Image (cartoon, rainbow, N blue to C red; front, side, top):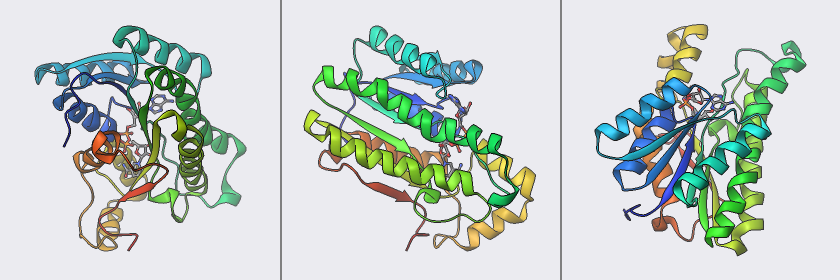
Length: 252
Ligand SMILES: NC(=O)c1ccc[n+]([C@@H]2O[C@H](COP(=O)([O-])OP(=O)(O)OC[C@H]3O[C@@H](n4cnc5c(N)ncnc54)[C@H](O)[C@@H]3O)[C@@H](O)[C@H]2O)c1
């Protein structure tokens, strides 16, 4: 895979799971990385892990659901690194275990605020920085729930379909700027988010999800990160507007 030497990027939700694994992998490949997260301590911990491996990173606190916070965070990244070459908009929230008639407006707004509006806000401020640079690459982390239904997760699925649609529109509108935009659609991945699902649903969910996956195992965060890092790299230079499944064959 191409080197990221001389490239600067940001990863949201990089204090945990897929975001942390991706930030580490971008840094191993030579990028300087801004580690953005709502949880500053976990962002700092990711920076420490990157530094331990000899990489360069900076922790930046952000709430992607808050416009001012996103604007400030992206401005801080651009001023620290001198520009922005790529972004992995990964931060997101889970919401499951209720059919839509049982859900409150408050829950819908909580989930869509982060998963859809948050992803849009990130791109709103990343794209001008990339335009200034003369090009760039954005990957938005959706889900297999961005491609088909997950029973009992209406707000999550609607939001992740939104992320896929938003990514496609951005790819069409900003292709002429030399900016590629893709969505990444993982299935169940062993992270804190899935631990939360197991805690509320029961351990049987692990067996159930494994059984419906042709590879008969769940994804590791590193496997999803590998796809994100590839999609942001020049090796994927003619790929834009796609929604890439990383799902052990589930969509097949
Ligand atoms: N784990 C899975 O099974 C799975 C499957 C498909 C898609 N995804 C998607 O992958 C992405 C990463 O999930 P993960 O499993 O690594 O989750 P995770 O819970 O391990 O990490 C998510 C991170 O996002 C941060 N975050 C949450 N809200 C934020 C906000 N408003 N602003 C900034 N940061 C915020 C959290 O602090 C956390 O560090 C999410 O978008 C999720 O929907 C996960």
